[in-house]
Structure formats: C-alpha cells, structure tokens
Amino acid sequence: MLLIENSRSCAGKWLSKNRLWLCPREFTTLQGYSMQTDENILDLLQQKRAEVARNMLRGLILQPGAIGDCILTLPLAAYMKDCLELGSIDILGHTEYVGFLPGRSCIDGVSSMDAMELHRLFVEPGAFELQDRDPLINTFSDYAWIVTFLGESESHFEQNLIFTANCSHSAEVMTLSLKPPQDCSEHVADFYIRQFTERSGIFAEPRQTQGDNCSIRAGQADVDAGRRLLTEAGVGFGGRLVVIQPGSGGQEKCWHIENFLTVAAGLASNGFEVVFLLGPAERERFSDETMSQTKGVAPCLADLPLTDVVALLSCAHSFVGNDSGIAHLAGAMGVKTVVVFGPTDPAVYRPLGTAVTALAGCPSIFSNKPSAGLQRKLLDVLTA
Image 1 (cartoon, one colour):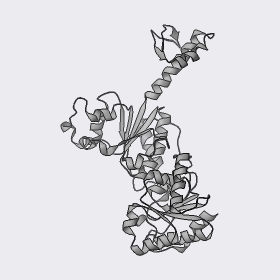
Image 2: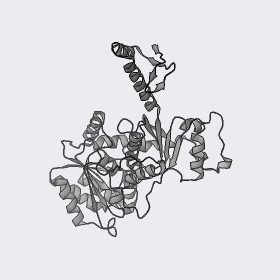
Image 3: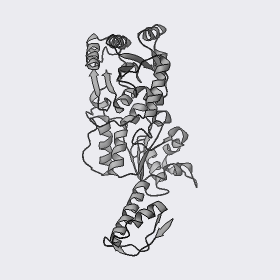
C-alpha cells in the first residue's frame, strides 16, 4: 500500500496533509500520470475521494407490503439512488417478498423486518428507550436516507425512528403513504415518487414510470432453473409458453375461473404451451371439481417460491392474470403481460413494464360470472 500526502492548493481550497491509501494496482495507475502536472494528480485524488464518499452514502426503504407493493417501490428506489447519488439502497421488508431482488434489480441488499424489534418504535416517545449498542441503533446506523412506508407521518413510530437513526449520525427520515387516496388518478409508483420529492425538498426532473424499462432482470441461472421446472412438469418451452395465474390477494379481484379455462383452451388450440401457476389461496379456494377441470386443461405448478416464479417467467412468452403481485413481477421482467381488472383502477395499479396490457371488466360480474367478450379481447391481444 502507498500513502500519498500533499499540501497543495486545489480548486481554491487548501488540502493540508490530505491522505489516500492506494493499493499497488492503483499506484501503478498513478505512475502513468508521472509526466502530468501536480494539478492533474490532485484532480485524480479528488475524484477518488468523491467516489469513496458516494459509495459510502446509503439509503434504506422500509416496505411492509407484499410482493406487488415491493415491486411498485422499485421506481422510487431507482429515483432515490439517482437523484441522491447513493452508493447503494436497501429494503427492510419481508424476505419472502424481497429476498430475490438483489442482483436482479436496483436493490443492493435486503434485511428481514420480521427479525427486527420494530414494535418498540410504536410506543409513546416518552416511554421509548435505547440501550448502549442497541440492535435498533445498529439497524439504521449505516443509512443517510431512510424512507418508511411503515407507520404514519408525525406518528410515534416516525418520531422514534428519527431519534434512533440520529443516535449514531445525522440521517434524513421521512414517512410515505403506502396507499394513495381514493380520488388519486396517478399511478401509485408516481405517487410514491411525488411524495418523496415533496417531503424531501429535492425537485429533480419529472419522472414518469409508465414506460420505464424492465426493473427486474432475470439471469441465465434463472432461465436454466425455469427450464428444469418446465421439463419436470412436462411442459415445452419453445418460445410460446403462456403462464396463467388465476388468483389474487382478494376474491373480488379474481376473474371468474371459467374465463381463464376458456382462454387457456383457446391458446392451446392456437399452438401455445400453457401452464397454470397456483398459490396457496387458489388451492384453498378452488373446489376439487375446479382443480380437476384446471388440471384437465393445462399442467399446474403450485406453491412455488418467488425465485422459482422468476425462473418460470424468464422462460415465458406471455403472462395472463388478475391484479396481483405476480402480475407486477411479470410486467417488471418485461414479459408480455395481460392483466384483467375488476374493482381496482388500472390507471393507478396497472403493472409497470414495456409490454403490459390492462383490460377492464365489469366489477359487478367480474368474479362471479364468465365474460365471453373480455375472453375474446384477451385472446386477441395474446395471439396478435
């Protein structure tokens, strides 16, 4: 290692015994500048310091929501990383929903919300106590910017979080609303970014998320894992695979199952390979007769962890589903995604991605009656 010191004036500022440790490889790089002026060497030192400082500046988002909420937070994370020049940004959430994000998105690291004693932050500030080397202090000690969707603005939680984060250093902490107001007409991802800019006072160029590029990138390992899954299920993956997920978080958001069965049969007759993706809710909600009908139309893959769902979608030509977390995942991956909406507003909640089509059904019959007209529209989109 080499220690460089100088006391020259640079850009109007005196650098008194400025120090920078360089490894041998970096020193060799500097030797190549030996014929340049001292000012150029000082410029290089300044650039190196700026890079180190930038890499040390970290952000954290507390996201207590499910998979769809976490994916809709990614544009905010990318925006913060860009406009604040953060070296990294992490998510504190439920690891079953966020654990797959590092390496596939702008998220650099995740921590388990369930492993933290966050309940302590909900007490009245007068009763809130921290001990020396308290785990809560360590949780937030590395972050210069903290955004939380847990708790409410000016609540006990926010006050205690601000106190905790500032025990070890100065940090900016702000609370954002997870759900937009009832009369909201902007996309929820834009709503998150707008809240951040208003509360932080940082007004960057307007950022519209509707046409953004893929925010989740599958790797070759995902593709290989997806092919193994499909081979085990006896499903081909020659480029025309359609994954259909007939479930969602609420019964009222689920298009009647007969619609999906008819669409699957229509796709199969047009030469597409079809596979149904089922979660625990569908297996509990579907009767034995419905399960038998579904398996009679196309193979079913059930209760897959999210990493396997990513693998499956990485091999898919298209995805069909309700307003659900997996629909947001498919859209974010750049898969051709067709989503049918009933009671929720697609202008606010449609998945983001480069190949997303949102179709609106009639809320009054959406979950309890088939809709031949909407079936035809969906098939037209998929077979175009």
